[in-house]
Image (cartoon, rainbow, N blue to C red; front, side):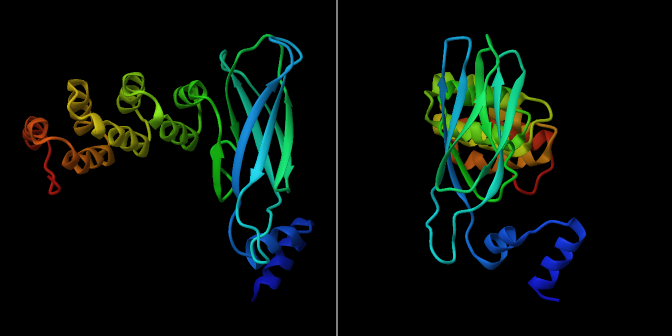
Length: 239
């Protein structure tokens, strides 16, 4: 059985031509690198359109082409509602229009929500959008991306968001680990020490593991009381 046999089996079963898909994902190399921005056009509260600009920034060569993929776009509003559309992305640069309902305030937008397309995605949005995405997005990958993009925010403004992530029950451990990593640059702050203490007592062992590993980047004076209490509460060979 070779690639052609597998392609024929898929096409017979689906009744669809998959030649373009096979060509870009099997016979050629690389992956798509997307850069997405958006402009809000129209009135202040009515007749508004969100225009997405999608660029494929990967190097183009005989073995690495422009990818042809469907992509979903969403606009999320402050009241929790959303609108969405889907478009075929098959050029190095193209625009996608999404009409917005009247009298609703845009909170943030998403391209390829929760990252279903294999490849990289850069979304160019204001910090306020990333803050809302971190707090409200359903997809864990969207929240993780938002948290990474907030690294450039002033620490005093970012600290409440990091605290929220670390203390959020059931939050994915990788987000908490990223929040802890961002705290290590400001480890002299008493609030940071308190958040590390909470992470060391998290119910998820992966969060505790991340906190223990990151203690190496925290000043010894702050580490000692944390380690002493952790050693009493948990049996860990890593400690």
